[in-house]
Length: 96
Image (cartoon, rainbow, N blue to C red):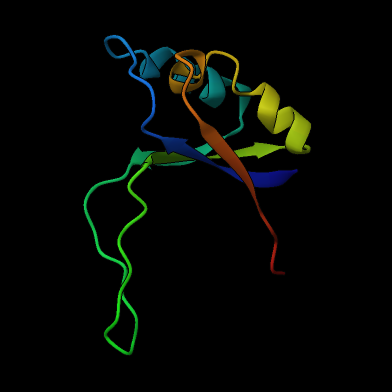
């Protein structure tokens, strides 16, 4: 199994608090590895120059899936995705 990061953009509004049932389903299926909303921060560089934060990122989830297609399938019921929002799926390559 590979790990994937779901990067959620802030380009859709969800009604109420629909996250509980979705996350509970991922936990029950054994693929949920964590996640959070993303708050304020700063981009930093050793030389002191910094770029602006990527403004559209609002949260992330880490999941486990056999491949990219299975990871994409796990978006069924994802509140932001179902509301028409954007979710980037990125594989987390193993370094061992």
